Image 1 (spheres, rainbow, N blue to C red):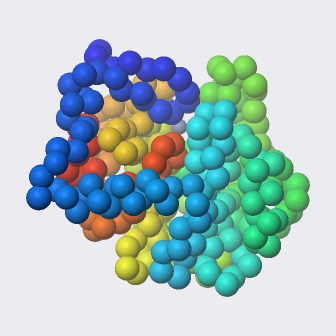
Image 2 (tube, rainbow, N blue to C red; image 1 turned 90 degrees about the vertical axis):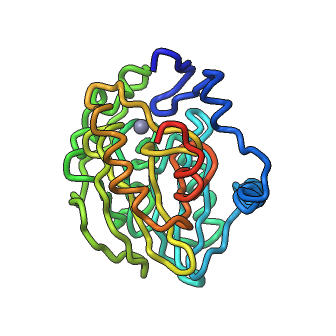
Length: 264
Ligand SMILES: [Zn+2]
């Protein structure tokens, strides 16, 4: 990590080391042409609603920390899930209202301030909406030091969780079935949400893994020793075609990260 340049933010490592960037490039060859083609078209589609099988995924960019909130719902169903509502709640609310969607649950991957800042506004409008978070992460919702917002000068607390989730839990909400996977390393209680939908599964990964990178592990409850083994066990074990929606940056796939992520 000595060669890594860290510029901003709660969660993202911007790695400018020349060797890392070199490894991250996609060399042109017939063998990896499908990956390049997929990546190109995914980039074009990025930030617009993406229709995947029966489930729609609507990304909402919260600009202050470049955090990605996701609205997820079954097509033609008014109920939805909101994953990691960030620090631009007015845009999240506007998107929900434009699409006539009602959030029945907020799913939190981890409790850093840039992933939870929108909770109070959503709860104020949709009072029956329940807050879900990993069992080892819940304290961050009510502690500005633990959720790191105090360090960034805005002292955020968002109220207690409604439901604590354990590794391996199988949940159905808004007509969507998903699995909870505990992936510590970036934070001790970080979980990811896996929807095993056809034809390609969907993984909402928070700050566990990004396109060509992984989450920081140098926060007080981070742990670099367990981070990569946890990612390999809980993320890279999923089918290669699984689409990863990270908490920052562009979407990717499990197969792409297996091939090209220089940290894994
Ligand atoms: Zn984070």
